[in-house]
Length: 286
Image 1 (cartoon, rainbow, N blue to C red):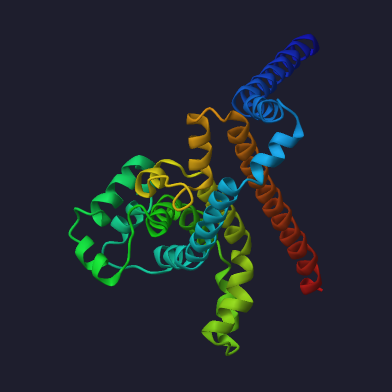
Image 2 (image 1 turned 90 degrees about the vertical axis):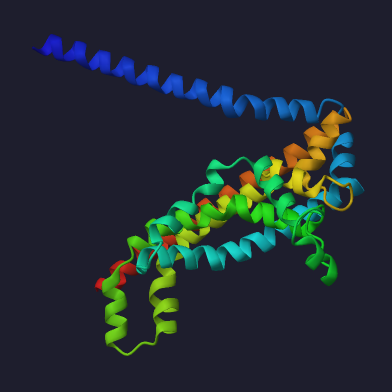
């Protein structure tokens, strides 16, 4: 019996190690390898070409546009995304199932298709163009079109992150606060919002990462006009097409570092909030 148990344990140990090696190999090929190749390509001619690339006027303009679009999308996602998630969880109304299904549409639609749909809606041949032209608003091949495209592709992240968080809220605390006479606004800020913070942080992290990485939709609806509608990802694409590889690698590396820093910062913030909850809970119990 003891011998057979040792054999079984060895087999399990071997299987565990094989699984670990498989996961490491998969991550190496899919993530670590491309990152190493990107770093090598960016610093192929030394540090100075990289610094010149990421401080050039063209890249700074594209990065500035990306940051502006990202900030606007994050603000709208924070407010409307949370509201939609709250409505889907806490309210019943006709068409709720259909609306819940529509939330996932951006996951299934290609970014190129999104950009083309926006061109059909707001381009020169659309029915809305005469009205937009009359009020002096240009959407297609302009920043507003890029904003709409980015908002569309980012829409599900906040909603899908917040729905399970809202479903698992401690309703007893809300009822207790209501019984004590707290107003709806007070209940939200003192009872509900602290429980939503971790979900909000993760939802916003995904949104920011997506805004910085979107390419297909913004290229089609924006046209990639240098200095006007060229985002950071479109700048990388144009640099690759023009065979300015150092500039492309440097910009891609900077965006990658920025995304990693955002993820690490959100991770740290979530852990800090969890530790705070753990330290507050025993004090409340006492």
